[in-house]
Image 1 (cartoon, protein in one colour):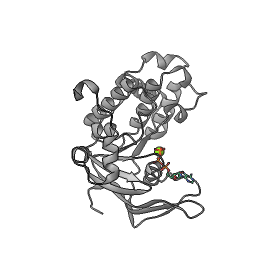
Image 2 (cartoon, rainbow, N blue to C red):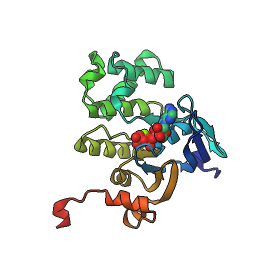
Image 3 (cartoon, protein in one colour):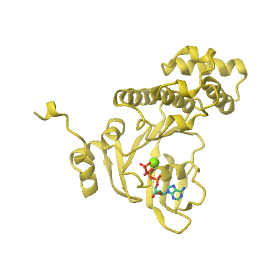
Length: 248
Ligand SMILES: Nc1ncnc2c1ncn2[C@@H]1O[C@H](COP(=O)(O)OP(=O)(O)OP(=O)(O)O)[C@@H](O)[C@H]1O
Ligand SMILES: [Mg+2]
């Protein structure tokens, strides 16, 4: 594997308990600062591929691969922000716990860093002095909080698994813009998983299209959108809804 690759795998195969093959011969790699999108329909194997990359495969999934490059400095943002938080623990405390664990800070430093992150992500500063639980935050606020947690370990790679699927379209746009802005500030690489080709093309320079556990096409995002080769990519680009006024 190229020495500039900071996270990657070659010839990844994943099987379930019964021996069914879920992911077939997938190779992917990320270089510092790069933004790569992994697009495909539900059940195509995107999440399992991500989980294999960070060594968090679910129990019962067996893995075989030719080569891999691990990176301990990865952070992940999950599809459903609510289920990634402890519903019974105040949100500010959850953020502080992550900072303390990853950065080994004392209580005063922890609080200062948590406050700085809250401000950077435009979350209400009052969160620091109230015992608000995740259930009292909006979906967009929850996702911002998870992004704050992910950033608190100064990641080299940010893995995003459908980070905006649970959000409404306007909040989705804000969160995507925020992720890009933070990437410009901090320079981490992004592996962005989504079933939405239009969203992937907004965020990523290059895309990989996955179907039934296999990569069927890869290339620059613009090329895949304007001149897709594989039938499945064509179907995906055809599924992007046109805006009626623009059509006219
Ligand atoms: N823990 C597991 N045990 C057995 N099979 C699993 C497990 N997790 C996922 N699978 C199967 O592996 C395949 C790929 O699942 P995966 O979650 O990676 O899909 P996905 O592309 O992320 O889909 P979605 O867009 O819906 O999130 C599916 O057929 C799924 O049923
Ligand atoms: Mg998934």
